[in-house]
Length: 139
Image (cartoon, rainbow, N blue to C red):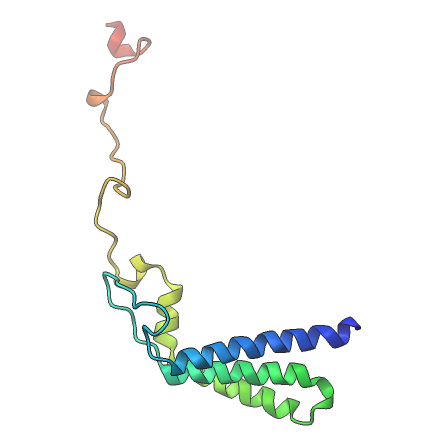
């Protein structure tokens, strides 16, 4: 099989599988397969409709890759995928932004200091041990 036939079909099948997984995740209630997370801070809620629109957009893009140039609806499916994908991103903007930004930046607060992430304090000269060759030990 030639690469120009195999590669678009393979990538199209991968895209369709990813889109179907997103669609199923949007439909299935939270906590069905994976237990709900316990976090210190509450996460932004995701829009199930927005996630479903993103999944549908990816399925349409996969279908247009599988159909290649011979499918008469390639242009229509790509244009519809762009519209659905844009709407899905807009509906999930806060959720996607929170996933992309570090936790310290989200809340404006840093983690409470402890032994692992406590910044080191510089020691002053009086608390340093004297070297054998330092001026304090020579006098």
